[in-house]
Length: 228
Image (cartoon, rainbow, N blue to C red; front, side, top):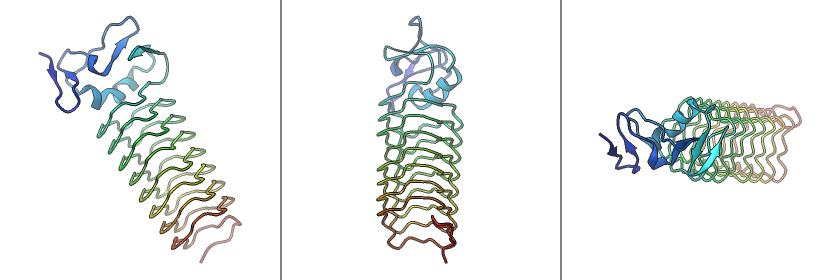
């Protein structure tokens, strides 16, 4: 028998539908769920049927999932395959995207405080978002757009940020130990109190960046020299 999820207002049950989440097949037939909360599992579930046309809130989607403005706080989306997904302005506080594939995804204005994006593939993604306290350890952020992004206290230990746009980003207190920032753009970035021990900044643009109390021990500087 169908029940309503008190946390999200989703319809759940052994053979119930994702009607509360607005997800139907191309012909308007609701998809069936397997005793899972629609809003908490919808992204991981959608990633498994990405090749099948979907209608989400009346929008026909034949490729990447359309999840703009969705409330996905605390969702467990570990390992989800969501390349090119539209997550603009989505609410994703504390979401688990460990190891997820979000290559070229649109996360502009998304709210991802304290999200787990460890090892995620975010190459080319638009991450002009709120990522305060997020875990991006060992994430692939090559050529990602992080312009003006709030990354205060974020964990970017070992992250690949080659060619990333971090102009104007707030990296106050962030952990960038061993991060690869070669060719990255950090114009006017705030790195106050950030830890860049052993980071690679070869060819990076640090013009007007705030390096107050920044730890650059053993870091490779833009000119190739090693900082004491």
